Image 1 (cartoon, rainbow, N blue to C red):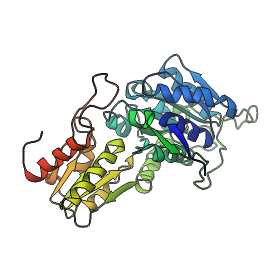
Image 2: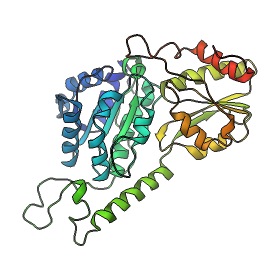
Image 3: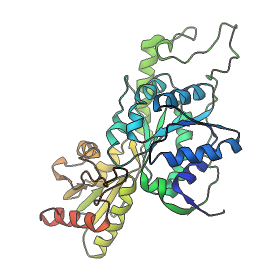
Image 4: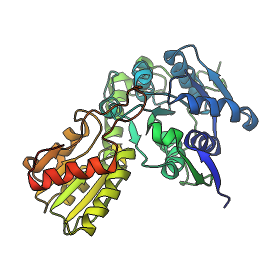
Length: 359
């Protein structure tokens, strides 16, 4: 294993290529721009194609087309650009076309977008939120595997820290097990045979003979996401057995919370932490078990309270839930503000424990 000092965007791009990604399209928007630049530099040598699209809408539809032809494909932006992609993401979910969407978010205000979506129909998007670059490298490859396994678009939820931090990492192809054959791809081999294939949401369920029809197809899609919800949730937790206070956080912010919680435990506080690794499926059963014996559940996220909704839904006692995060954006608008600071997080946790005023 060879360690290299790499910026997060470089490591993620290399990991995507190691996973077999051979098509990437995007429109530059910081902090996603670094990933697009790295893909444009690295993809040709791997025999792939990277296109700087004229808009996010063009980029996601190019990606949908490449995926429909059987390529491992990806696109991305930050939350503002991904908002423009929502129609295509929904269409891909409903016509079962797998690709990865990299959201190199400017902050943590895209939780609702990732977990609720903005398209039409009964669909969800598996969303992984890594806490550091090492995990981002693994999650990148896992997402390509999950996309192909479930024939669905999936989301990588990153941020400026992941994109721009340099760490020592090793990039190698990871094996997550066998996948079903891509016998559905539009490769032209069915032309003139009476068994030609199509990928179009309104026609799905009609092409096979006999086919389930649109109603049967959409019911099957709903059942598929219901099944995913039951088996693909992921989480991390620590110090929950004796905890009186549990702090819930996701993504890069969770790494800061882990550090602060360890400090507070060293000071004698009975406190633990819980991190949803998948934002969807949300690990609700695990959170319910972790919160069963605590006096207070504190939610730290850098927005006005979005994951907060899911914590309230699943906590053993929703009256114990308190929000200690908030909107915090740097003056540039492109990075986190002062709340992404360990001493500030510590003060907010202590204020909630002691009942004091929040700083």
